[in-house]
Length: 395
Image 1 (cartoon, one colour):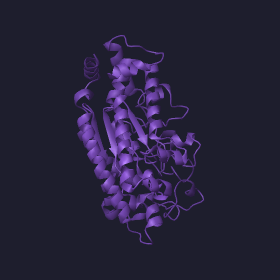
Image 2 (cartoon, one colour):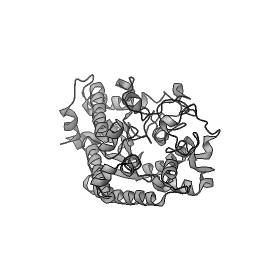
Image 3 (spheres, one colour):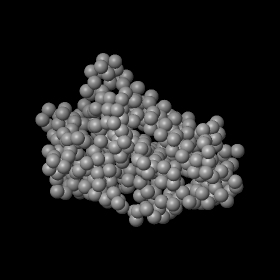
Image 4 (cartoon, one colour):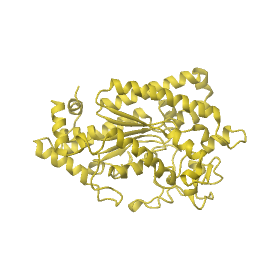
């Protein structure tokens, strides 16, 4: 089934319908420009028509604010250093003192930050350039999300389909096909499956050895990437597991008084990442026409932990909020003392990096995305050329 047939199979009533190349060209150019004036950080010449984000708290920008869960952070001191229009200084639901890696990537793409699913304003023209469905506490394993009453990746994929429905209703099938096919999709998740599920879950451990659970997760990696591809995604970035044993919370819980990274957790993360790379290599072969890249969070964060001065940091084994040993979410509040200068810290709370580090990580990831997705070449050179190629492909 072609992308056009997929979209046509569930389209609703259109506000616009395709009536010729000129209309489609105008619509997609409108997508590129309609939101670029919303914030001065956005490039007026976007490199992709949309940015779609799935995952967990590493990329959640407020989805959990609209869910009945305790896994959220829409209170001070979260967001204290956030600068973005009328949201400046506000706790938006980002597990950070400021911007996430995905925020910086949106800026580099020349796009506004995608709104979180569930936000009342996330509709109509406000979501033409993307959507964020990431839900803190989720993982590759849907059972992880169920533990915390957050949105599983299965649910998030359904929300991405709903976003496509919304595009269809506003701009019609041909322009939607153009947006869906050239959009950038990022999936950042996996840590919760281990640190907030398997390692604490005796029932899960009784049913699966580590190797067996890893196989379950990798099967879900395959199925979710395939599912994204089936609904039209052709530029997909997957973020690896971070160095689990270097998270301050895990050093505190499992380090036995030693503030160095917990080696057995490091080994688990490395093994998973290595096997995931193999899975994705196979998918690259089987999913013709789709570019899949892995963004190596493990190596980057571990290097910063081990060589802080290289990144302008001085504190790596504890977070800025409270003692930095265990505080996150409901334990990181305005009642807690926070460090004066978060830019000296690798971690903001006991799980999540600071904006200062996120900016550097985004620079590294962006170099990978530019090389692999080849922005400014192929279909991104001119809207007219892109649309002509899509029409030919969908015939």
